[in-house]
Image 1 (cartoon, rainbow, N blue to C red):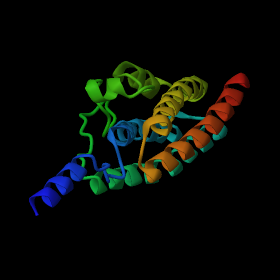
Image 2: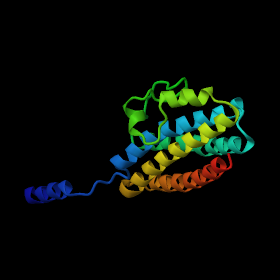
Image 3: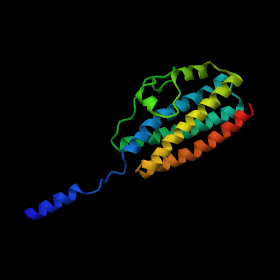
Image 4: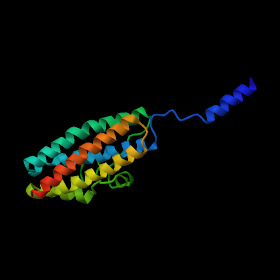
Length: 182
């Protein structure tokens, strides 16, 4: 009986981790939530700042895609028993980081000064600033999605990363075409 117990104990030490997620998945979710929140906040500015119809359409698409993804990311973190990121307001935008560690860690996040400049713009100047900033913002999301695809373990998180990558690459291409026409 003692030998069997020892064998079972040793086998348990070498047993694979049965979690469906890893640190890369948690990092992806905790960085992508405030990243998406900032994109949604930027998109919400478009109607009141005289954005053109094409820019308003881009902004609407961003909100339509990213609001449900935020909920899905929150659900993943809850399922994994992980805390949701907390952030103080940034640039007057509710739910945004204050430029602290979490916001600084996520690629493509706008600073408080950049958000203030966007809030102050109107009409064609808003369109240009929004498109330039959102391209940078989306490129940051592509960086995070690429890291998740390379290192993530959870199939739902990696699928989301692929979907984000595909959608935001297409959005970047559209925004680049809109900028070229400005």
